[in-house]
Length: 464
Image 1 (cartoon, rainbow, N blue to C red):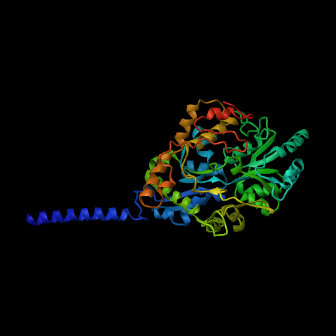
Image 2 (spheres, rainbow, N blue to C red; image 1 turned 90 degrees about the vertical axis):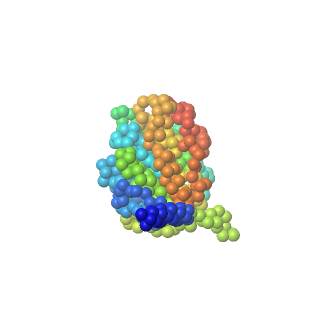
Image 3 (tube, rainbow, N blue to C red; image 1 turned 30 degrees about the horizontal axis):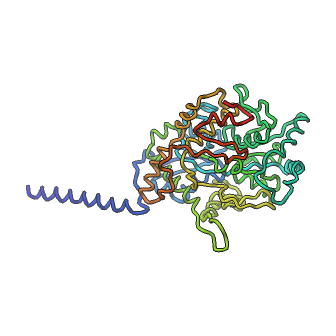
């Protein structure tokens, strides 16, 4: 009897010591809390663009593996196939256009409830025109005829070219990557801010060409330079490295970046079906944890030397080398390196320092803001993809069905407890809406809390 009491006390003491040891270990930087994963082997899709970097880096630097995940990363031929493969379960999740989860959830195109708990990056796109169009733009605006013209460059000097083609019974042809892509909305925004009508979507016109003065068509990102060179389009909006490729091949000139169209705009998200997220909540948290760490690694900086100002992005050259591999982006390292290391060539004579061209962690980049989702909804309504007017409440409700900061914050809290991120890295107390901003190329202010006022502010497109 006495022996049993001693054994019970001994076992209880071991439990206490184990709990204390676990507490001490958990308090050390680098400690990982093990989640009870529902699924360990995953397959994620991506398109060959530099902003797929968080997924690629999470795999290559072992962040997925740290979470107990074995992840296969597979290139997809186009955005539609990528989305279809997430919906049918061939992919567990994917690098997605910011507009894709929203469009699918509201039923524009493919109908499926897609959610995002992670924004992959800010900025990263450019608008490029063919050399012949750039020559005409310089004729229309002599201020552009310089080695380094003043930026931002608006579409004002393009307008006479558009009109001349219309007078000849033709339309300027420009490419974008997908109807609900940031690229489509940014290209339309840039054109419309100069009074050029990019066309409307209607119930019977799913191509968005009604009333168009410029014809926009879909071209997969890696095909943009070749399509431009062949003369099938005279300009395009795409992510990197396909603007820098046009400069390297001497076939086109990037005239603006989306940083100038909308400073620090959201670009891509990580998307999964709601069904998958509901079935695999711990696995989803583990994925988001790994992606947050990848973004942090990509944006790691150090101060430059005594004779140089600013910050060095210390891991971007390594990231560019990884992305240049054929199974990832597959473009030339030197071309990828430009924007990834904070530089951008508008022309071979015009290399500019742009440290915020690609942002993967800074400025609370990775947080899934409701106001970002609402901006995309306003553009879908502005251009007729949402065919009927909606009340303001609908915009907020819809954004909250797609954007899941609750999941993001849960993953971030675990990383904070593990000592892998700083508390200041995450906007813990936010209501999910960014402050109002007027940092757009036309100066029109945007407040995510008042989407209908924003719609009314534009001269071209639906106003309510």
